[in-house]
Length: 548
Ligand SMILES: *Cc1c(COP(=O)(O)O)cnc(C)c1O
Image 1 (cartoon, rainbow, N blue to C red):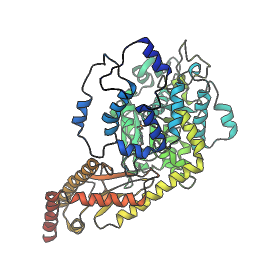
Image 2 (tube, protein in one colour):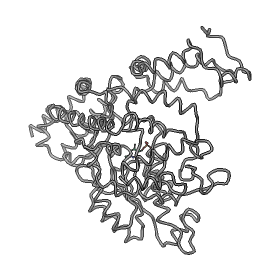
Image 3 (spheres, rainbow, N blue to C red):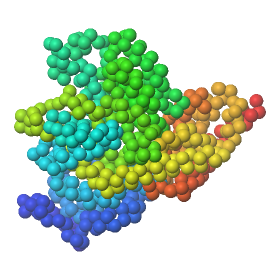
Image 4 (cartoon, rainbow, N blue to C red):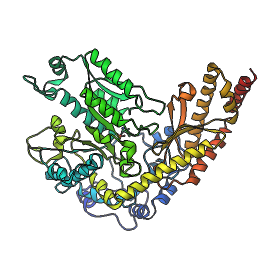
């Protein structure tokens, strides 16, 4: 036992110990390690506090801006982390945490990630990664094939080619999207005659040379906010991200897309890329990718598909048809840290053409030499961990049919939940699940009748009240800590496109069962009764509507 007051000392001998000697078998760290690998869910249940501590109080635990002058013992510090950090973390792997795309992980990834961290390979260059480089190239090849289904000979020729690249591994969908649009921008403003390319001369000279007055990227109004960041860092400006109208199912309208492109071209603005969304973040809907591809081909735009979340659906032969047309994309983003059940920090962008990434190639003398197989010459990021190893392991251990089962059960569970909601007299399904994501809200029974006869003005008033109620329920439910759904704002046709706050549910966790879903609704119904003033004013409003 280490007494509270015993302090570690600063000495080279001690420092060398922390690099060489593992913690003893009775240490807090070893204990945590054992419990984690025995029963992760129990460990998290025991250590994550069920009741929410206000953020302002948590901030007090992290208030000091000084670097400690005296060292702590590892075990002592581990206990501190348990109390202050783990206790107030979010139980993302809980079966009733159904609000976000971050869910449970398979156990085997824990010991395997230790290997990854212990080896500490740096994928930026082959000198610090060796076998990890061909492994990462193979992972990119596997995902490329999942999308584009090329022949064996294609992969034999390009997968490990020093001067080519099937894509880039990165920290997530944001960087993947930026990379795709970076490639598209540089290809659109490529070297020609005396102009040496936007990557050399910059945007101002590129625009002057090509005679454009602006650049644009088009995406549906349901596009992810990372695309705005991309437009910003690529010098196109956030206003250069042009949003296109969607239909009632949150899918881009091809006619509206074509009109926007024509409009931009008339104004001498170059629409160099169109982004199709395969699994919108808010509703999980998929754009008509084949139709968008046709327009891009006609107009000479780069066609990027943001399948950060929905791309994993390609693993299922039963549902991959939902993404038909994705194989026509010039580039595709897939996040392994979403539906491929890999820990945070695993994104990928794949390019149909192995030459596409040449337009962003960078070389440096001491590393990234021309003709080397260094992955860093085609990535936005520099030093990078060996995360690809976890994707590689999961694809072998789970296998394609295993992922198919995971994807299928999640979609079918969402369909079950949708019909369950539709069968409740006091819940309203807002968006039907196309993948495993749906939105809905609580709506007291009295509202339904009033709705049918309400004037537009009254409808808006009623909707306002319901929005407040949805926010109240979502917040209370999160604070109670038993279950978690997220919320977002939509503009459903049924509600005259009024701003409508809805619950958003993502059913990726294989441990979430029907019972859990029943309990989520029951809890929400119960919480609604904790807002009597709001419920009363809703009822009053409904009575007024029905009386008039
Ligand atoms: C999650 C997501 C992103 C962003 O990915 P990060 O990994 O969070 O950077 C981009 N697009 C879509 C459609 C997403 O769902």
